[in-house]
Structures are given as C-alpha cells and as structure tokens.
Image 1 (cartoon, rainbow, N blue to C red):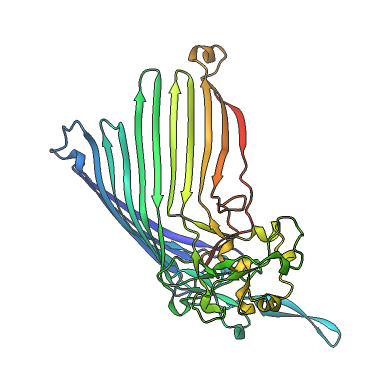
Image 2 (cartoon, rainbow, N blue to C red):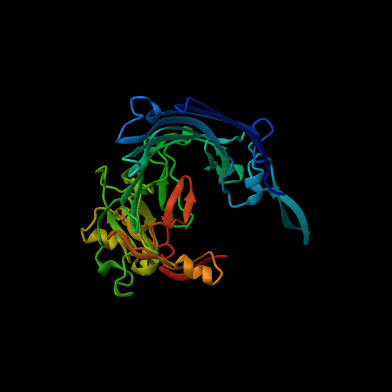
Length: 454
C-alpha cells in the first residue's frame, strides 16, 4: 500500500491589448491521507498584470523599456507530514494496527496493538499567498529585474501534536495552528559591459523573511523537547516564530574545581553552568526560561558575476545567509560535557557561589548552544574555454568546451558558531526545527570536464 492522490486542474489566461493580463486557475485534489468527508481540497488562484510600458505615455521612453505591475492571490495544499511510520503517514485518518506477540500459558500468541490515534477529520493543510510585484527594464534592459512582496499564511497545519499518555500514545496527527511568513524578494540584473569581444553581467538575488505563529489553539505555549534525548526545548508561542528556541540564559561558568574530571579532556567544558534568575525569586524554575532565538534567516542573498572574452568564459557566485540561529549540541560530544559533571551541587552552594542548587543547569538547556547560523560562501567558480568553430569543424564536432569548476572554496561562519555546517539541520519537524549535532561538514570540490556537441 502507498499514499494515493488524484486531482483536477483548469486554467484560463486572458490578455487585452497587450496591456492587461488576467490568469485564473483552479485545482481540486484528493488524497488517501484524509477521511471520507475531508478527502478533497479546493485551491483556486488568480493573477492580474498591467504592462505599463505599453501605455502611450511610456511607449517612446528612452529610460523605461519594460514596466509591469502584477498581483496574485492563491491557495495551495499540503498533505505531507512525518510520524516516522510510512503507513501512519499515508492513512492517518484510520485506526491502524501493529502485530504484537505475547506469552500466554507459556506459548507465544500473536495479537495486535493500536499503531496510531485515528483522526477521521484530518484535512488538507492550506497556504494562502498574496503576492504583489513589479518587473522592470531600464536603458534597453541594461538594468532589469523584479521586486516582490509576499505574505504566505499557512493554516490547519499538519502537526504531530502531544496528547495525554492515557491514550496510550504520546502524540497524534492533527490540524492545528496558523503561521504567517512575509517578506520581500529582489532580483536585480545589470549588463555592465557589452562589446564585441567582452561581456560582463551581474545578478543579485535577495530575500527577507519574517516568521510568526499567529494561532496555536489550546496548544499555545507548548514546549516540545528534542529527539536527541537531551531535554532541550522549543516553544510555540503566538506572536513569535514557530519553533523558537527556549531555555535558560547563562550567567557564569562553573570553576573546574567543582567538576568530576576537571582536567580531562584538555579544553573540555563543564556539563553544568550557572544560569540567570530572570524573575528574581531566588530559585531557578520554568519561569526563568526565555526565548533564545529562532532558526529562520532574516536575509538570504547571492551575487553572481559572469564574464566572457573571445572564447573564454568565467563566472563566480558568492552567497550568504544572516540572522538565523541553530541549536548546536556538538560541543556536548567534542568538549565531553559528561566528564565535566558537577561533583556536588551542594558544595557549590556552601561555597557561596550560588544561593540554591537549582542555579546549576545543563549547558544544553541554555543559550550557550544557540549559535549564529550566519555564513558567507564562495559557492562556485567556473572557468571554460570553447574551441573556435574552424577547429571543431575539422574534428567533426559542432562544439567543444573545456571547463573547470569549484564549489565552496571559501566558507566563513560566525565566530559564535562551533560546528561544521550552520546550514545542516537534524530536527526538522515544523514545531522542533533547527537543531544539529555539529552538522555534516561542508565539502570543497574541484572538477574538470568537457562539453561536447556532435
């Protein structure tokens, strides 16, 4: 068995006088993931455009050769979620069973046990997007590009939400909550130099994003824990980004005389740190936890330059991401936090360092593991040489290009980051996103090759 999906799609396009454009579409999809009464979802979309550059007042402009205003609004559906079981992911609306063995009177007896909590009302997750934008071309398209604003509202999120253990399960699939993502997207292209033998073009692409949880029903303020077994938390609180990192704020380090193994390993770290009493009650409780950051970048950008001179071509792209954080517990392994466990918390209290043993909390539960995920990279470099036509014709080819490429020759991370790859994510569920154990290293690659056309 596997998940099945069917649907219908229709589109209408209309243009009037090369100035006004209208496009409308309608999708109706059904998925075996959902119950009989909620199986189908309807997803219309509408877009309008105005080619301002075709108006009389711009038809002879020496500056503006292309100007288009547009706006679109539409719905899309999502049927995907991950419970760790394909069968549950495909048929979550049904009561599923697992085969299970038991010993009865000394004999193995085969039986069945529930595999999930059925949800016959499970339905499509829907995203509504409003997207106004402008396309432009100036000076015979020597400068061109587009600027868009987007606001994407996703509601009825498909989430594996915690439930009471009295059900026999710790979580179940539900439709819950609403998240809004909004921001700007820019594409800016320039033809810097264009002669018979030499060309240089530049493309800048940039986007911003703001993520906000706007509704979470009765689960508002839920604090799910990581899947590493470290008890570190996220918080899903209305008015903040979904999957915000949550925990204690470090005040000071604990002197190594109170560690279990203070000199092993070299450059090791203590497992426990002294945290701040944010509410000033003299104890460390859940009330002293705070939002420590979130995994969503505020700005992502890339800059590409392309050059060609006679038969040579050369290009490179630099790219960066800024404003996101990652919950990196890699130091728990590399700095062997377990070797730095506190020998006697009461001894630290008796020394007058802290007023109560609760001020000692595991480092992985604090902002010390919430690190900047910003980076700058030289993503790729390409150098090529295309043989002249008279040579390729003599050897029976229509085109022959020799090239060399390289990726990630330069990759700079924030000084706050201690891992291998700030882009890597281990925990990737919607409500627990942005954790890693140092990440998979970024590889630098260099390759050589031929492009041959016969």
